[in-house]
Image (cartoon, rainbow, N blue to C red):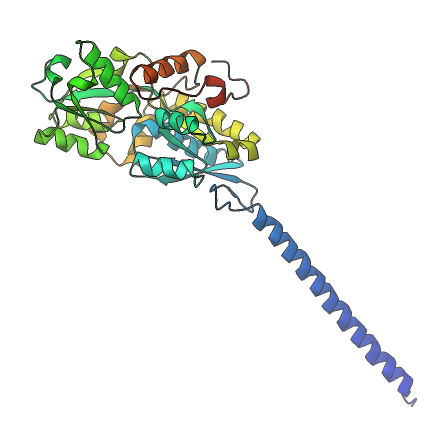
Length: 343
């Protein structure tokens, strides 16, 4: 039998060590590649300033703020449509309990956009905040609700009337109603109040009426504690109080996703006009009494949500007329023009 030479043994151990080194080197390279990949995803991922998130699946998440009102239904329905389409854009909803909290988050860039009172967005733009209105939230859909003993706007003289914010179309609608009887805002006591508190305040007699986003007007009607004095279209046809607003940063960073958001948002609005889609969406996201929602949805429209220059001019004229905003932003600076938007 042939004996193994010492040289052969050394060669064997050398080859073994060389193989081990190659394996370790390969593992080290793999770890470095994985680490670099993770770093790349992190830098383009969650944006702590704006709330935008580019997930590992390649989808862009846009964080939109809202208050639980029917005027935000198009945002809710769009969220559903984007998920059904398996779109590369998805909506993360962030609920707020007050307009001040929502606008603070929007103006500071903590959220990417919102369904918000259009006058609040106009004011922010006038103050240098980078944002744009990309669509209406609705058309019409507001009412001036009053106590049962109020027969006309003239009876409101000297009485307390609630609105959600001075920077609102509800303020405009109230002023228009008073003007019909030769009154102005100085002839009544206008107070700001949380929408959810208004029906009970009317019931207790602490206010004589209110104008606010739905479904809080419908609550008073449904509970028979108040009545509609004016529907918004009687005071300002095709009026609107809320709009979909996006930050300039989101629009700049995500131009294609912005176009997708606007397109699907308008599709969602059209869908809300058909069958019982609006009712089902409202029940799912608002948690209000079905009877109240049915009443409220009779007053509102979600089609034709483009912001036309003529509609914006009417709004601008009114905010100046009633001292809501003396220097509203011009149409081209404030309203984003989506591709193919010719409404």
